[in-house]
Length: 395
Ligand SMILES: [Fe+2]
Image 1 (cartoon, rainbow, N blue to C red):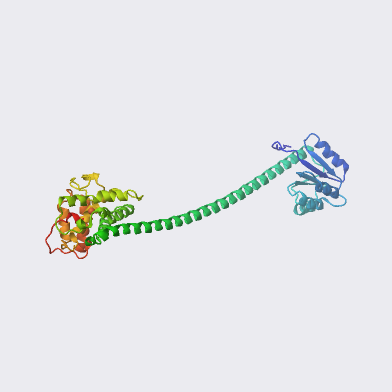
Image 2 (image 1 turned 90 degrees about the vertical axis):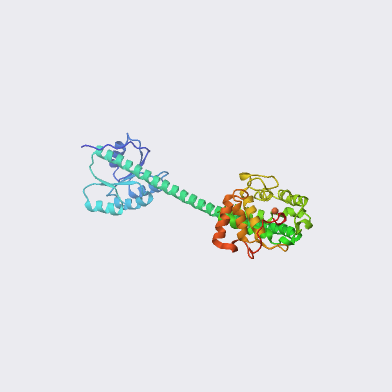
């Protein structure tokens, strides 16, 4: 007979053989003598079950006779199956007892059966294949358990990670809320400080009351028209509101003088840019406010003051405030002279486009004026009076 070969076994296996005939047990001992198995024998089912119950390590293979005193093979296997469910079970029958075999398969969960007498060679191979099958089953079980354990670990890790991410997200959101509240608080304080500083100048020159606020409004309008970033618009708003804060050092008589200023008085007025710079540079604004304010009287052709800067040496923010300053000063009514109107103010900046005022800024002003008319910049502008550029003390 052509006997199939099996893979080499990896473990030393325990085998239990149960038979009431000592000669059969001896025959097994002899057949398996050369194999590296741990052989246990029992002369009836009860003794076999006792050996299974006290076993130190699991049995891989259980072989039992069918016809025995105390209990038959089927009854023995039915109980043995509960003790070592993974063991391979082989039934020995003295003859072709079909009913016993079917019973053994159903109740005893047997995997194989042999009818006596058997061929030793075939029996040896079947035992080895059964043990090999047991090894595969156990390995399969071990791998399934390993995968299950790793899955559980991954699941736990996932849960922990999810919890950590949730916690971190919640912490970050709380921090963001805190920062937002703190930022809003700072903004309120900054806004209040800026308004207060601007008011101080206003109280010294009531004739130009509201000038700073209006220049800030117009400057922001121009900046928005030029599609500047919000942060830059905010900087322009602060700088425009504070642009004349340096007038705090100019005597009130000069600020409110209705007539023409002397050369000395004009020089005193011009110091307001530098004075403002010195005041503002000490404040840690998040934008270069002091520099913008310092340059709000600079002009493209270098005819401005205090540094006589030219072209792109002047900050864009300063260009915007310069244009807004001129428009507001020309278009507004003053107690000592009538308003000249937005239209005249527009003519002034267009006439001096790229000479005194930045071209992009002038273009933005014109777009606003064309879209919204006189109301674009100021209320109450009146153009029926004689047009003339604003005097030095008005800007
Ligand atoms: Fe000014």
